[in-house]
Amino acid sequence: MREMTMAAAIREAMQQEMERDPSVILLGEDVGLHGGAFHLSHGFVEKFGSERVIDTPISEAGCTGVGIGAALTGLRPIVEFQYMDFMFCAMDQIANQAAKIRLMCGGRTSVPLVIRGPQGATGRGAQHSQSLDAYFMHTPGLKVAAPSTPYDAKGLLISAIRDPDPVVFLEHKLLYGSASPGGGSALSDESMQPLGTDVPEEPYAIPLGSADVKREGSDVTIVATMLMVHKALAAAALLAEQGISAEVVDPRSLVPLDTAALTASVKKTRRAVVVSEDCRTCGVTAEIAAVIAREAFDYLDAPVERVAAADSPIPFAPACERDVIPQVESITAAVTRAMDM
Image 1: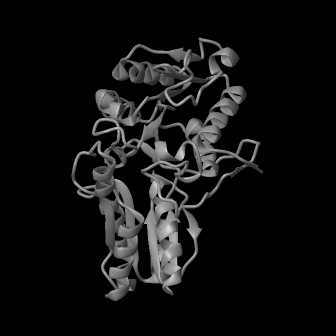
Image 2: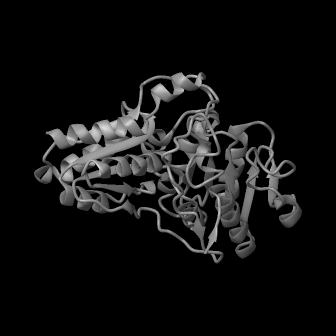
């Protein structure tokens, strides 16, 4: 095992798959000359050449369409977005083309395409800080991966690249530089600890649709995604001091969703809190809460609690941003409500 950041783990996954399979290509804005907006493809154009590491014009719809076309002709493209917020510029290509081509062709063709890039609130304002998870969960034909650790990121990305269908691979910006947000950022929480930094050197695949229990517990299940996994673990540590044993479950992929693992945990603890950084209305927490309510209703001793971002654009001011997105204290408060029922 080696200790790696999530950025390094994603870079290694792409590099190893490109070395293994010459049909894997990378394209996007500044992925070649500049190594990507967050430098995840640094050195790739020198290693693999400009025919496989392709700088595209500033046209998200254009580069996504090129990726779809390349996938239909036998390649396995990875399309990188500088910010996932910009995916709205390519929604026709993603939702109307990539997601639907297999069905429209009667299953005779597929689109082995990975669309990846950073999302999440990090002090960059309303158009560079959104969490778009639910948009893609809501689009049949897409798979959605959402890693929280370097170990998960490498294994899930390798699975995504090898998958025959389009996969949207979500990466939280605050997790790029470390396993947990830190480094003195005003937006981080000092109570959060590193997790999953040990990453094997050899390639490995984590199946999409396989949840992971990040912390075992007996009193309440906290289902959390991406950055919220780390905040949930910090909340669980604080709750343990109060005698509350919280189990933290990370779905790791949102489509397919490992409903069996989620409901098994809830059936054991009999209480559930669902945490995600996307908006509360019609968001990830709503869908997961609905799954739990249906599959584990007879086991619940309290209503399912949801902790999500406020239904608001993400503000630029750090104090306002912190007020909009879930924090450790809002998770502990939700658990306390569930325990008091």
